[in-house]
Image 1: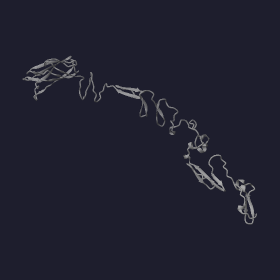
Image 2 (image 1 turned 90 degrees about the vertical axis):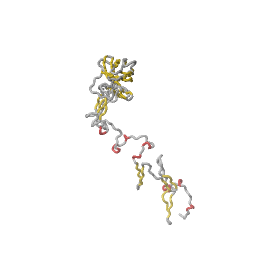
Image 3 (image 1 turned 30 degrees about the horizontal axis):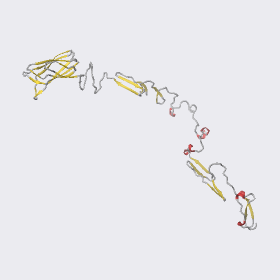
Image 4 (image 1 turned 180 degrees about the vertical axis):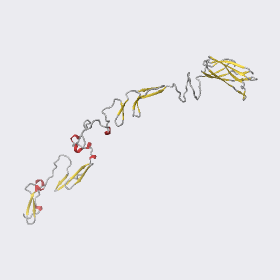
Length: 335
C-alpha cells in the first residue's frame, strides 16, 4: 500500500461500518489488515426493562459507568472480580419496600429461618401451657372465681353479696361478711359500695351525749352528769307559796322575804317527775349581804317525797331574824 496521508482518507461513521471494514496495521515494511471493524467496535445494551443502569455513557471508545453506593442498612464491598452487597437485617422496614405487599412465611425454609409460620397450641404444645412458660397450666377456671397464685393456680369463688377474700395460714379463702350484735351491713351493687353501720345499744363511746332510760349499771364513770330536762321557776307571794317545776332538775328562785328567829317556812314543789321512790336532793344557795355570810343559820329540810310532790322547809336556827334576800333552791330528782 502506497504511502497515504491520514487526512486524505475518507471518513466512515461507526454506525455504517460493516464486515468489509478493517483496521489497517503497518510496521514500515509490511501492511496488514486486523479484524473486521464492526467486530472491534462493540455496543453496550441494557437487557432489563426497569431500574437504574450501571453504564452512564459510551462514546468515542470511552465507557462511563456509575458507582454502586450502599444506602441505609446496605454495605458494598469491592472484591477482585466482583462486588458484595450486604444488608443489615435490623434496618429492613418492610413497609418501605416498594412492590412487596406481604411476606408469606409459610414458604420459608424453617431449617434455615428457624421460625414457624404459625403456632398450633394443640400440636406444638403438650397439654396446657405451663406457668413456667407463661401459661396457667389448667384447661379452665371456675366461673366467678378469684385466681390464687402458687406452684399451681387455684381459685376462690366469689359469687354472692358480702363475700370477700381474706388471708389465712392456708392461703386466701372466701369468707362472708356477717353482721354481729348492733351492727348492720348493706351492699349496694349499683353504687359499688358496702356500708357498715353501728347501732348503739350496749356500749357508749367517748364524747357521746347519752340519754339513759331505766338502766341498771355497776360502776359508771362519767365526765359530766346531765339530766334530760332542767327547769327554772320563781316563787310568788310568799316563802310558803307552792311552786310547780316539772323537770328532773332545776333552780327555784324563792320569794324575797325575812325569816324570823327560830322560825321556819314550808312549801310544796309540784313535779311530775317525782315518784314515791325518787331520790331527791335539795340545796340552798345562800347570798352574801355586805360581804357577810348572813345565811349561816338557815337549814334546808327535805320533809317528804311522794308521787308528784316534794315538801321542803327552810328553818332559821339562829336567835336573830334573817334579813330579806333572794335565795335560790337547787333541786335534783333521780329515779
